[in-house]
Length: 81
Image 1 (cartoon, rainbow, N blue to C red):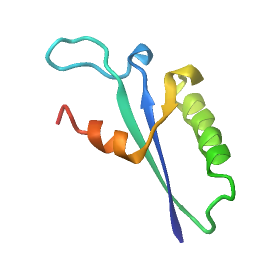
Image 2 (tube, rainbow, N blue to C red; image 1 turned 90 degrees about the horizontal axis):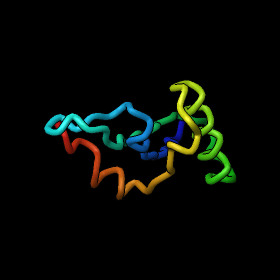
Image 3 (cartoon, helix red, strand yellow; image 1 turned 180 degrees about the vertical axis):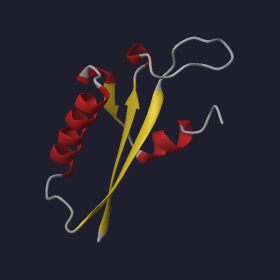
Image 4 (tube, rainbow, N blue to C red; image 1 turned 45 degrees about the vertical axis):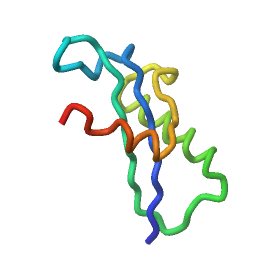
């Protein structure tokens, strides 16, 4: 098994994140960690397919999800913890 990782920012417009100090909507950050037999040949296409699946599952506008780098995810995840 190999790890396939995707990172996304969900815009504040989605209304699923809230700043605990101000109560205002804020962006949230997602990490998708999959165990796969084989890594996809086209990572970008796989990331877009996953974006669509996340949008559908969470019932979010697809435009509210933005693929981001691992570095951006790490810099922003856990800010409110």
